[in-house]
Image 1: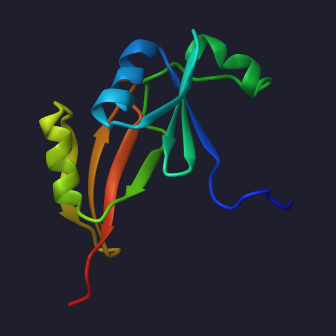
Image 2: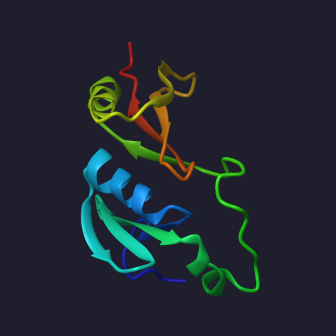
Length: 132
């Protein structure tokens, strides 16, 4: 398989409350809105599209697989590389977004902090820990 571009093109998140989750990405994370209709909103995250899709519209995209009820468990963690985790977390807190954990130095050489959108999708900010 040869990709037409390198990197991850899009991540689609199934959500119950499209309005709240759209507001989170637009206002909380201040991502640029690329497209919006009655069942979705797509945002630019550094060349990757974050597509927020109403859960009711998801089944045709994954058939014959089934979707799980939204918010039942954390099934993935999406990481965003930042220069300064502490500063990025301070910005989130200014916008009323609570952290799940961190910032904390991890044994694999990253400083991370996790937070969740209103649908329960877990994100983390991560930066390299400078070598001593």
